[in-house]
Structures are given as C-alpha cells and as structure tokens.
Length: 184
Image (cartoon, helix red, strand yellow):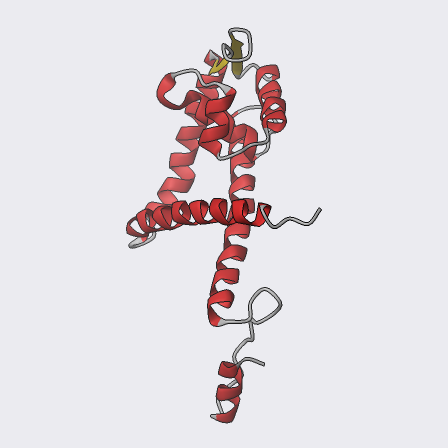
C-alpha cells in the first residue's frame, strides 16, 4: 500500500486507489505509467478512427499505418521516397512500409514512379486525391467539430503536441541507451 493510501486510511478518509505496481513505485512512475497507458489507448483509438473514417470513403480495408502513409504521400502535393516516409513517420521498418505501399498501389490510391534504389517516389493518384479529400471532409465534420465543441480544448492541443514531441525525443534517446545494455 502506498504512503498516500496509508495516510488516507489513518485520517479516516476513503482509501484511494493504489496505482503502484512493478512499473510504478514512485509517484513520478505512477504518473508516467498512467500517461503511457493513456498514450497506448489513444494510439489504438486513433488507429480505429482512421480505419473507420477511411472505410467510410473507400472500399480499402486498411489499418492506421496505410492511412497515415496515404496522407503523408499527399502532403504538400509532392511525391515522397521511402526514406521520406520512414523519417516523417519515425519508423525504421522499411519492409512493412513497402508492404503498406503495395496495398495502397493495389487499391489504386498511390502510384510508384522512377526506378533504382534512390529514384523511386510515390504519389497519390486521382482516386487517392478523391479519397484523401473525402477523408478530410469527413474528418472535419466528425472529429474537428467534436473538438471545437469542447471549451478550451483547442488551446490544450498545442501543449499536448509539444509534450508528445518532447516525449518522442526522450524515448528515442533512452532506446539508444537501452540498446547499448542489451543482453546477448
């Protein structure tokens, strides 16, 4: 039982929920573990949202990664290389990116252009442009309107973005450190 829970019991207050466990022993660990679980739930919800929204505007049964790649390929209306896509999504799993690209190409949403190792780029087709436009319109109507209806939420988005970007860098750094301590 945590010190806080013990104090509450001694003071005759209802016992607080004890969030301590092997990943969360200090109050900082409890808070950070709660954030990590919220981040995981948000990521999964985001993936479901993307799949459902895309499924509402086309017949492609795609997961979040394919949807993200489709929109990133269209971003700024210029073709992207696999290196661009990996960097923009903070991914290093090139074979999985290639698999997603094959799905998008097969669905007629993306076109592969060029040849060789460094000369290949990907761009959206006219159908890909229509799908991403329809996705954007549905996103505005459902998601953005819901966010705009929450008082003060728009102001919190900037801070959340800065926090997540900072955490992304911290996770990258500690992942490099952890890699130097791997067991054989």
